[in-house]
Length: 621
Image 1 (cartoon, one colour):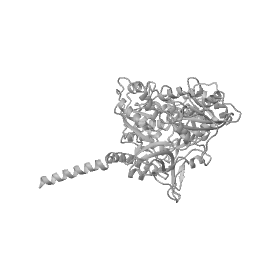
Image 2: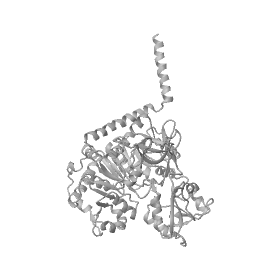
Image 3: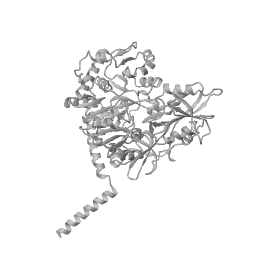
Image 4: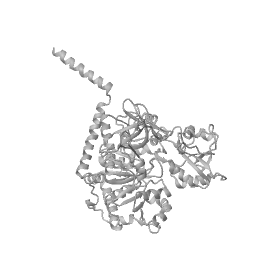
């Protein structure tokens, strides 16, 4: 009787185990991850309710006191401890207290490369209560001025290696009485202030806490620029809430204080500054910072500095896979990779070549109010949803008409959700727990990112602009961008901005910019269809000089298509769908095509041979 009873219990438990594995295979891994995230969420909720917010800066100062001699930053072989960065950032704060009129709540814009002083300036400004705007160092001239003014900055701080870019806009800045500072000891630029000489004349004593005390978790702390869905770059408002969420990302994936993170992505981007740097601060870990990504030196650095976690974007992984194979490709200590945008085939190739690395794919827009984290390692997925997740972060995938560029609505005027396995537009509900902070000084674009009266009167959703699909196991997969934006080399390219730059030329009547697929490349490469003004010849030299002068490398159209007439939709929008489908194949397109040849610094006719060399990979894009 006793044996039969025990046998029955064991059989029942085994049956339950196999039933759970079959019907709910991710139950325990989901539960473990959910409990971890919920614990952190409760902490953030306490900040919200008590008004006693422990910011990323507060956390850094705590770490500098707790582990002062631990390496915080390694740059070009030089080690900077938590104490070193704390003290130098104190000096930066003192410089602006003593030599400027900055006060708590003012905004300062930074244009700096990846370097230790990027962090020293960022933290120093934060210590006197300033908001900081990170400007993309790839943008120039008109776009750069637009970014500076859009975040409402009073002071412009420029890195020593960015002075050529500064020269292009300095007259305009000075006309507007903007105070400009450069990270040098001296300068020949008239009316420009220097910082390094002043650092030697101030103390490194801590600044008063009341200057950087934060009482509201919704308070703005940063402006990070994004192309969004259209137009010039926009200053996404980054709140303390968003930085605190981002800072916990690596920890949520399993990071610990003993980890060494390798950051090669630009610090002006939220992936590097918030997930990377702030993530290290949250853990009390070490960051190895590189000025720019190098595929040939990537693994050498990882081995040299005993890196355990790397950050990536999809293109980065592909670049690494394209490097010549070497003995010891798996001879490293990297155990985790955190990032977004890697294709399934590249994901598999990366793991096969470089070993058993936990790939932590995530999804989230800089300005967005939703994030997915692939904690299970499912190849190709950006994350997994479940009942509990949707209660905390309510979202939907809705039907979308790509041709009309608008949601599909039913006979009652409401949006419709898609079925499992069907592609839909990702939208995220805006509420007090998941607010959308919008863009600085840009109510129009902020409003455009919102969908109102979606499923009922009065509801509001954030429009991510991304098409996604959810499978039967609730894994989510990115499919494409909608509207007037495409991604190339890890950056959003706003087609309207590129069209405006090309349209300035006096021989161009109209330009239609779009992204086309290129074999063995993530994202889409830029292409422009152009219409000439009557009786005006095509001036390829002027066109080349225009895009090089005013557009960052990733936004320059690599292909041109000369057309007689511009196709438009029924609502008079430029027609892009057919152009995208036709691509840049000269054997199937009768109209003249041109290719931006970097080696010749010119647009040249796109011949069949050049096309085949691009397709085969002999010509790199």
